[in-house]
Figure 1 (cartoon, rainbow, N blue to C red):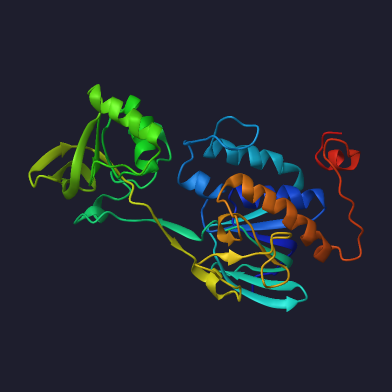
Figure 2: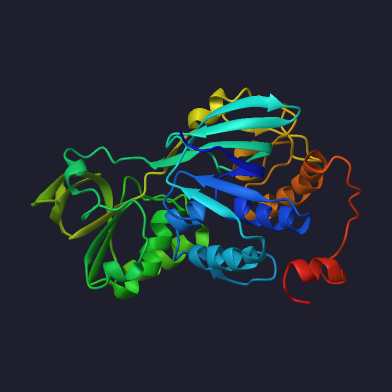
Length: 342
């Protein structure tokens, strides 16, 4: 039998919002464990765009997804959270008022006073392009995310798509590629206008080959691409030399077991009270992209704000008899001592 792990708070999701929630809870002496289905911390930042620049973190002009994750991990070091990676929460059972018994697919059992759902939009799976036999190349020469730009240095790269991800990686990988081709089904792009303009400048200067059409066939052996066939919009075909393909057809969101936890749902999102970010179940909170409320913006900075307010309510469940006085880290010697800076 697995021994039950007891903790004040269990956070489901170790992305930026879940990590920052550890900090806000830690300032209030609330201990946390985190569970994440990924094999690493950082959520979408670490999995989908570790090297992609993020420009809207307050006070930080530019940081990568990996850099933000590292900075948050450094920030929460004083609170020594415990991570349970490559595990998915399958069952949530109410055992107190509040109080929950939570079980993962690995058989880990937690008993916690408060449960915080910071699972992004659930599990994100890339949409597979409708090209026969693409599965044989996945993971070797067909990639749905760029985890290390260096892996693509000197390659003949084929990027497929017309949104921000396709354009961003076209611009970011172009300087290190041997050759690059961008394929989109129409000569109209959904990405940021500035990115579209930069992409067209690359085409004009001969650094990027733009094909308007659809990939119909892949060539290669043992998972390694050598080329692709494009059916162009005038019904002619073109042959593209490539040894790496990056299809960006968007992501499919799967809510997974969260749907069975007794929470109210609205279009696969969890409605919350905006004063506390508590769900319809007392003691269960939802922060980050997985929640919804009037005016909601799916930004990391919004999730940070939500985590701060969540902690103020969560501490009342964990320490019902304790008088909590709001303090500032800039002036409170007590908080500075917790952070190891005093």
